[in-house]
Length: 250
Image (tube, rainbow, N blue to C red; front, side, top):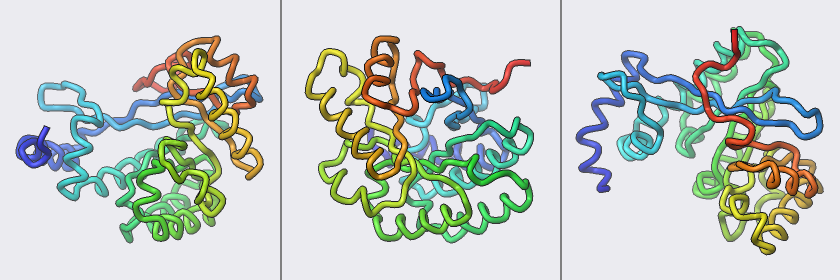
């Protein structure tokens, strides 16, 4: 769909949602293999329409990026996740997805610094996540901002790892703590020997560099068992749990 034509409809909705607090978060659990439990959740943004319809990122994020509104959404998420974590049990941590453009925004670092002081939470409970494609597009500026945020004690995850042709060439120079293996390598891994070799190599290289690994889109126990055998650190997908609004059951 043409983004410009689409934006005529969506840009005003996004601006209104920012003004009226019509964004909300859902949380998808991430299973830790070593401890056999769930202490980490990925925060996923949704938008509530006028008729209470829930819209997903594919509906509004491309327009937000095209219209220069994505930074405001990123900052909204950061602000709200910090406030939410303050009321959560201290063993829980959250992943916050960030757009590539936010690393060029001078408001991000001061906001994170201020929220850490205001909330008093352990910065290690925050994992910022950026896609490999976004990281490459503004590599030096992104790398510099990642270093600054990590200096505060926050952690970083690189999403969709392996999707790019030069993934390995810059990995040793990019200061992230976690690699999330691109789901395209996971969905057919049980029947595809090439995917098995590639995923095993990603895990081995990540571990050799002192980084943890996450496999997304895991839907079957047999897939999970194979990945455990490869040494994967974390599992995410419908097998572990779907995104939900309510983080903890009463």
